[in-house]
Image (cartoon, rainbow over all chains, first blue to last red; front, top):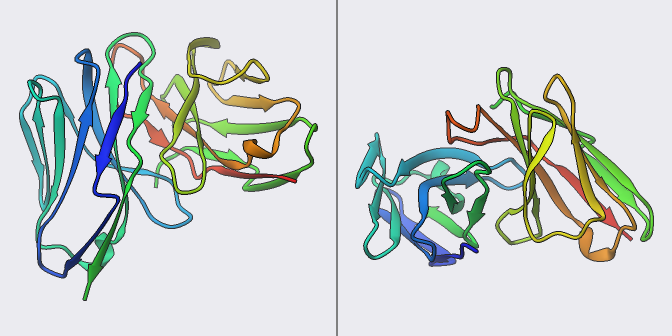
Amino acid sequence: GENVEQHPSTLSVQEGDSAVIKCTYSDSASNYFPWYKQELGKRPQLIIDIRSNVGEKKDQRIAVTLNKTAKHFSLHITETQPEDSAVYFCAASIGGSARQLTFGSGTQLTVLP
Amino acid sequence: ETGVTQSPTHLIKTRGQQVTLRCSSQSGHNTVSWYQQALGQGPQFIFQYYREEENGRGNFPPRFSGLQFPNYSSELNVNALELDDSALYLCASSLTLAGGYEQYFGPGTRLTVT
């Protein structure tokens, strides 16, 4: 089955700096890659996603890039703010009838004021 | 916030007991997936229901079972609870299988098995 590896496990940045989180996946059939933000005690929230027919997607301060050949994708957050502090999870989904998401192990992002 | 709701919020059970968790999907969504999230880990896929039928299952034993109702709400049942079943149980709803890929999570049920 699919395996998703995520790093780093923890990341601290100064407010205003950029943060980058990277994930690799194993199954070349995966075609959907969402990113979720989970604050302590809350539900995972979908913040951005990308499909395999696109190389990059941007939404304000957040962007995701996908390299299908290398089977890795990354989350980029620019101009970080303290409210960006949370655990971020990447996930991958293989196309087909059951769109099960395989998640990475998460990155604890801390934005220092 | 999504329109996905779950009940109860918290639950404490004893090893060997049975538990039922409930999920109401977002309006218009007919697919529900269940995930188990152990402390400090990413969610793990348990199974998915589409139009009242199981439509995919992760690496979980048969004592994990589910139902989906005509209004697309869903239940997760766990029999013979084990200590390792202690986790946050999340349901996620999505649009038709052939349509949207996005899955939106509910707030979860925190299950503690003692």
